Length: 41
Image (cartoon, rainbow, N blue to C red; front, side):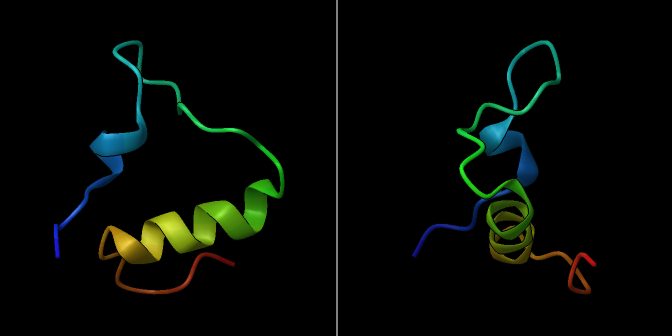
């Protein structure tokens, strides 16, 4: 399994490259997958 970082979903400008269907839950899952130390509240 690959280890992803937050850089994998950012554009060159620094903005996030994602579709905001349910942005809060999607970001929680992406930060967790990137190894964030604690859940994003």
